[in-house]
Image 1 (cartoon, one colour):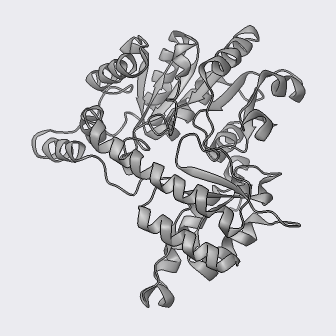
Image 2 (cartoon, rainbow, N blue to C red):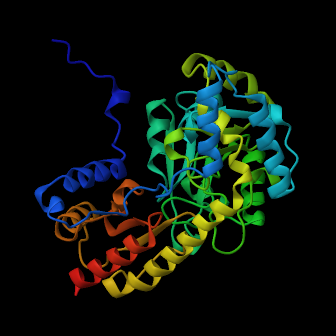
Length: 387
């Protein structure tokens, strides 16, 4: 029997998905069948389906179209519609030919990292941060420099933090709004980071998949401050299309052909039915903004209720749909805490170790993308549990 496994196959797991698997299994247990529901605050996906017009367009496409391959970079009309979105939303003019449609933002990250970095290159990533950044980079043989961010920098990277990390670097990943903290970079902070990277010949990769989900000032795109930034976005979060697996890249000219060749070989093309449907997503603002209004209510419930449940320190959560909460107490263990919370309260949340390998034992992330009654019930259970 052959037992050899490639080193890239031994990546750390995406713990949020492991927690979801355990929570789903619990839902089928005898206790769940007896009437107590599991409350899912572990995974960041909207509880609503895609907008009605998107679903209608998918049904029409199934009934009337062949739905074969598209260009590797996606349907020209969808790329053009996304370019129009940048003009309407941000006042930024983007040539539609710089836009590549991808198989989710995950596909976008894979294509961008492969095109921009070689094995042995070094990329700076904030921690706490989305774990797939460092895990995908590690699978590709790219060195990851973790920048430990905290309250003093509003959980965002700064030039001084990169300087303190020392050594060369070939890229920086920023996320605004960020996962798991929900914090954001304003235009001036983004401009400083873009200039810092440009002066050192390093790529700036901006994860903007939570744009549209903010609770004060709107999010700023890196395209407003840099022509050389690599921008990643997705139809999953604001547009409520997680399972449709569709995202996009806005690329500098130099990376267009490399990304196209990589996409041809790795993915052929993004899902055609999803692209046809997504053409209508930009015309659903009222329905989608109703979702954001619900997230805002859920956010307020957690900001008010979690301190009463013993979580005293919470990240600001300017955008996205997460609260990153500190556990407190001596020797906290977020993995054990999350498991015990699931078993004893049927509330699922993600341990902070998923987002911060060193300090994440002290934190837990709650997603508030679900229905308001579920968030309210989760708070009631947690307050009763920790009293």
